[in-house]
Image 1 (cartoon, rainbow, N blue to C red):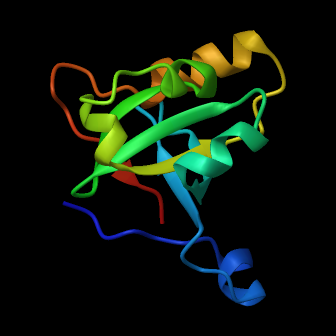
Image 2 (image 1 turned 180 degrees about the horizontal axis):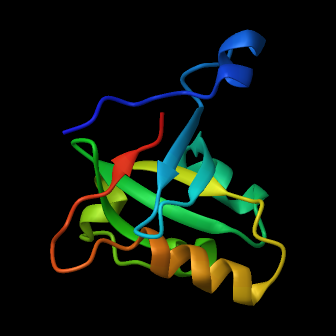
Length: 110
């Protein structure tokens, strides 16, 4: 299991806990911001991941995350949003890249 790695810019700004890079299967890095359930309504379009015990347990669009049933594992996980995907195609590509394949776990970027 990887330890969270923050961006150097976030460290320099003094906000290391909120910003993490996650690497997809393509080796592309995605910058995510830690958020909470009440704040999700502030984000219209974006990619969300739910992380539990250092592993992504869910990835998808923010709207889909908010519609999960209360019993879903993602509802008890730490939430991160990626807002840099500019359109629906980029969001879908990021979601697929970040989704673990066959139970494989993703790693945090350095």
